[in-house]
Amino acid sequence: MARFPLDAPIVVTGGAGFLGRRIVDRLTREGYRSIVAPRSRDVNLTREVDVERLIAEFKPRLVIHAAGRVGGIWANSTYPGSAYYENLMMATLVMEQARRAGVEKVVNVSSVCAYPNVTPVPFREENIWAGYPDASMAPYGLAKRMMAVQSEAYRREFGFNSVVLLMANLYGPGDNFDPQTSHVIPGLVRKFVDAQARGDATVTAWGDGSPTREFLYVDDAADAIVLAAERYDASDPVNIGSSHEITIRELTEEIARTVGFRGTVTWDTSRPNGQPRRKLDVSKAEALFGFRSRTGLAEGLRATVDWYQANRAPVATR
Image 1 (tube, one colour):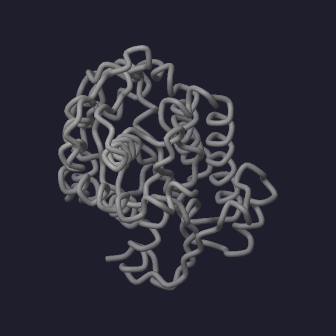
Image 2 (image 1 turned 60 degrees about the vertical axis):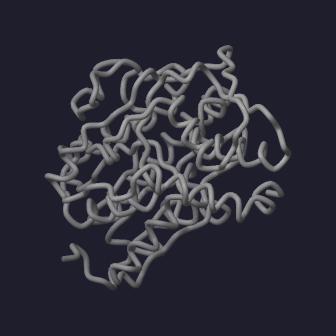
C-alpha cells in the first residue's frame, strides 16, 4: 500500500533526466496524480533561492532527489570541481529547504562511487566510511557520500525523515551516449554500433578490461526508489543493485556480440581503469523494503542497443 495519498504533491528533481523520467513513470503507474518534475532551465538546484521557491510553490509531501551532475571517468577526471560542487550543493539545499518547509520525506539518490577505492566484496553499507574513493571519481563520490552525513545529522537533530540509496551503475534505453560524458555501457554501445555502421575493423576500449562492475537496469532502479519512498524510513544508506559482477572485458565482448560486431577490440592501457572491483551486497534492500532487480544484463543490453540503433541519428545530432 502507498505510504502517501495518491493526490499528495511529489517533487522529483531531475525528473526529466534518464533516471528521473523512469521514476515519474513508475509513480504514475502507482496512481500518484500530483507529480512535479522541474527542468534545470527553470530551477537551478545549486541556488538556494531557486530551491526555496520550488518547495514553497509546490508544497510537496515527498521529494525524490534524483538530479545530479553525472558522467564517466573522463568527465569526472576533467571536471572534478564542478562534479563536487554541483552535486554537493544540490543535495544540501534540497534537504535543507525540504526540512525548513516541513516536507515529510526526502529520498536521496546516491552512488556506488561513494565507496572506498578498495572495499571488501561484496560492498556492505557499513564499509562506505572505510577509506577514500577511487581517485578518478573521488570528488563526485565524496559529494554523494555527504548525503548520508546530512541525512543522519538531520534525523538526530531535527527528526527529519530522509533516505539514502547507493545505486550501482545504471544503464538502459535513453541513456547518455555522448562519447565524452557517457558511462561505460552507453559509451561502448555507441562505439560498436557506430563502428559497425562505418565498416570499421577495430574498436578501442579504455584500460585493460580487468576491473569489474555491477550494472542496474534503469527501470529496476526506479522501482527501488519508489519502494523505498513508500516503505523505508531510516537514514542508514541502502545498496541498490543487481548483485551481478562482470569484468569490463567480458562486458565489452557481450556488447560486441549483442551489436553483431565481428571486428577486433584493442585495449588502450594508457587510459585509467578506475576502481578495481564493484559488487554490492543488496540483501538489505530486499529485507527492508522488498526490492529485487528483475532485468538480466543480456536483456537490458539488448534493449539498450536496440534503442540506440533506432535513435542513433538524432542522438548524434544532439
